[in-house]
View 1 (cartoon, rainbow, N blue to C red):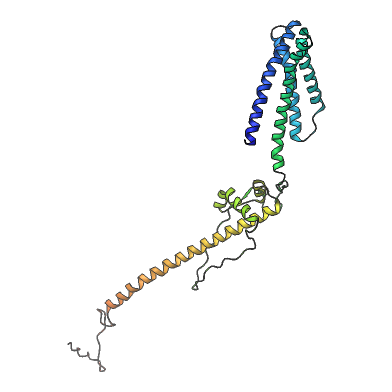
View 2: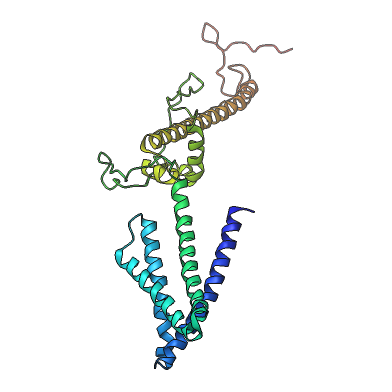
Length: 301
């Protein structure tokens, strides 16, 4: 059986047993109140004051245990008074039947007190378990103000998207883009943290923005130094992707320009061939002799 199933079964038994004991204890206290002059609503509510005092005192002590502070003295006093009042009322109900009758009548009250305390103890232990499980996580400090940042962005969780750089002027020399190696490497224990950051801040990275150090520390539960390294790794990765995308678009434009020039050159050559040699066209000037007369017509084959 799993721990969760065991805890659920124990809680169910405790609550059921406590409910049965509470009903019996209430009936004993109600009968005692009626026998001693209380009637109607008053007689019905008097037993609730004793059992309710137990519950309130237990809840106050539970809250103190969750916050790690000592239980208030008034809560301890209320718990003691509730125990005494509940047991005394049940003893008084059964004392008319002798000692055994008094003990039998008091037993439901004892059961109710123990079940309430057991239930509160289970809740306290369930609340303390997550705290101990997270004790190994590196603590993080309070958010730090970006004192050197722009006005109005001192507490920004996410930095705005940076506008893309202007298009690089193309030159005659074509060279492959060189990716500059960065000092941030996703090796060792930083790689899974960076991968987690990509998943958590996928929407921010898709818009070209970067998560702030504060957001990384809070979301990933890491310290300030590691948050700075993770953010630098994300920034370097974003820069590499932007550089590769810019270089790829430049190569596509040059390829289309060269393809267009290659298609235009055969058409120009065909046009020159149709015009024929110089002077054979319609606008060619007639040849003249050296003495100024018209040149004789050239014989044709």
